[in-house]
Length: 48
Ligand SMILES: [Zn+2]
Image (cartoon, rainbow, N blue to C red):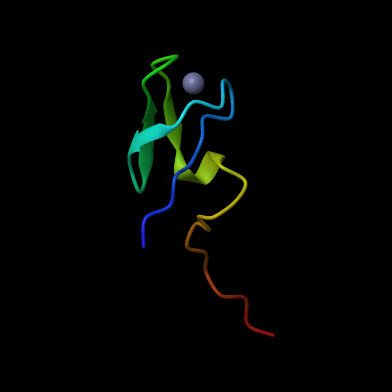
């Protein structure tokens, strides 16, 4: 499944990924962790 993320700065479509994306418009590297949706960074499970 392919998802299209957008630059949080200019909303241009991001290339590459899935860990780090690159915005062709503002030439900014955007980490998936910086995106507030779709990708959830792996975290240590919290034992209840
Ligand atoms: Zn951009």
